[in-house]
Image 1 (tube, rainbow, N blue to C red):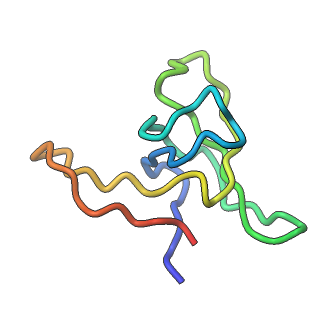
Image 2 (image 1 turned 45 degrees about the vertical axis):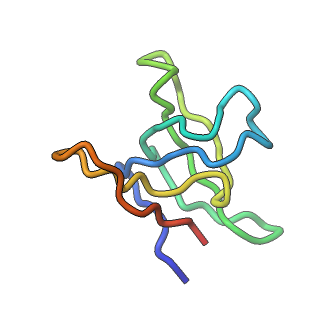
Image 3 (image 1 turned 180 degrees about the vertical axis):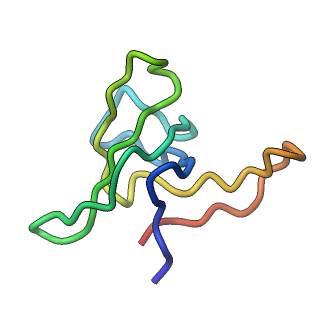
Length: 84
């Protein structure tokens, strides 16, 4: 099982199934999580960059985001790590 993101980690949206205003590739920062879902799995609260400073955080299920592993120093993408 891969380790999911922690508060402060950068993430990418992978699907817009539950939050259609957010598209795959949108980036954000984890505000809190993981939080367990009674039916199984986890969710995270993410501040999505495109919302700017007015964004309060959007709830994403673990399968809707992945760690952003972009090498910020070099600007080249690394392999993404899906969240289990």
